[in-house]
Length: 232
Image (cartoon, rainbow, N blue to C red):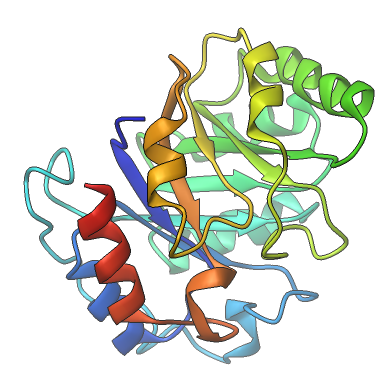
């Protein structure tokens, strides 16, 4: 895989975000879900969480600036709009059971009047151990083709992401949609070779989270640095 986008998710500490950003990642993900141990909204104010936009090496990031991704799970539209404004989000990742109609309406509300150019990611949870259920999950993408910009394929879990477990990536051979996607779910420091060996014409990047943490919400910068050097 030629990784055009490296997303590091589950971040909420300003200094840690600055350190990870300096590695040249493309997207920083912040989770706005009260059941997550990485929930940004556990902190009473966004002051100090969101650093100034940092420059990234041009060979790692198109346009040179790190984008901010807000992750939401079956959240009310007004709360998503508020977070988008307060945290200056560039992308919204929807990780619940959001309908295509909900996403279309949310996009119309935010773009262009409130956040011009805002993009949407729909996370698709892939079950493990049952090829039929995996196929059904991948087939569900078709209903979102006209309302999102990217898909993110993650391992199905009770924690809605951040489980540290991988699904069988080979099931993604069944994905024949037009939208690009990111590979997620249990990617760790020893997986660079596996990622390089994975090929799909629509796979443009990876999403990293729990297996690079020292504790929920805090990333191991050295481990990430070693991994990215091996990967890129």
